[in-house]
Amino acid sequence: MHVAVASGKGGTGKTLVATNLAVHLQRTGRRVTLVDCDVDAPNAALFLDAPLSATPVTVAVPVVPPEGACPDSCTACRDACPFGALRVLGGRPVVFADLCHHCGLCTTACPAGVLRMQPVEVGRVHAGRTGDGLRLVVGTLEVGLTEAPAVVRAARRLGVSEASDVV
Image: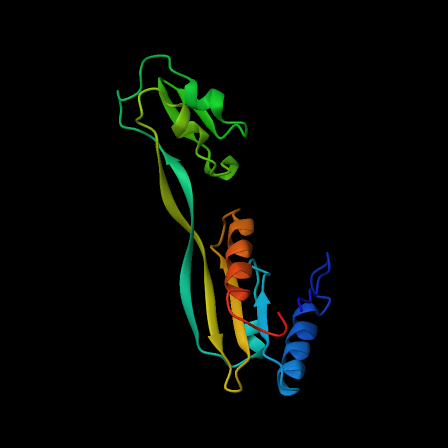
């Protein structure tokens, strides 16, 4: 069973409710995984004593090729990007990482084959167990980045990767 505790407003007690519900269900004999997807300000680990190990979360972004690698006046990468994440200035692509959706269309469209994708760390997923076996998964977004969806997806994937009665 999957249970979500959500609200559009901060400070309403979502984490307090979720952690208490998880602890209660664990104490009734269920296998429980608590996934804290508030990647901007995760606090579930403050309520639960669980040693956590971290795994990086990465997304692929285009890397600008060296000077002179792109054919003159080529705009194929810019034209292929439906999100406007690339511009061509002075014959070279410029990447606006906050607009990139990591689809790789720009690299596919590059006729010279000089544009490539490179993984960039945008956050971490931490996982561990409390002394009584409650599994805790926490996503944390790197400060100042806008890649929350990638970190939330990674936390959710890890949260359901192990059999639990309640997530």
